[in-house]
Figure (tube, rainbow, N blue to C red):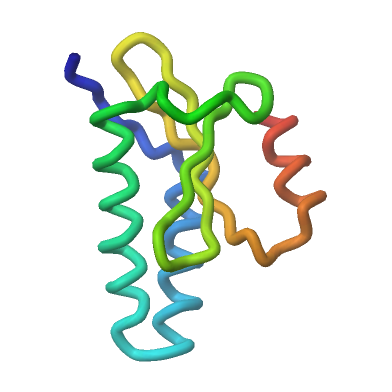
Length: 101
């Protein structure tokens, strides 16, 4: 089954923020983060329903080598990525995001 991935605007903003943070930490690290994020999303395309539902309809995958999680919903043949969050942030922030979406 072929899936389409839609990265919603909130997640796009979070990705840009994380890229900038990693790139400021070390030149080239932002690009490496993007490669790892892309690999995680490619994995979703193969087995989108493999991760269990963690809250409401949201499933979660982690970005390898980075403390970052991707929260997404599968509806039909579409994967909606709503949240890309650093796991180093306050857990209450993530909880609010999951409840608002």
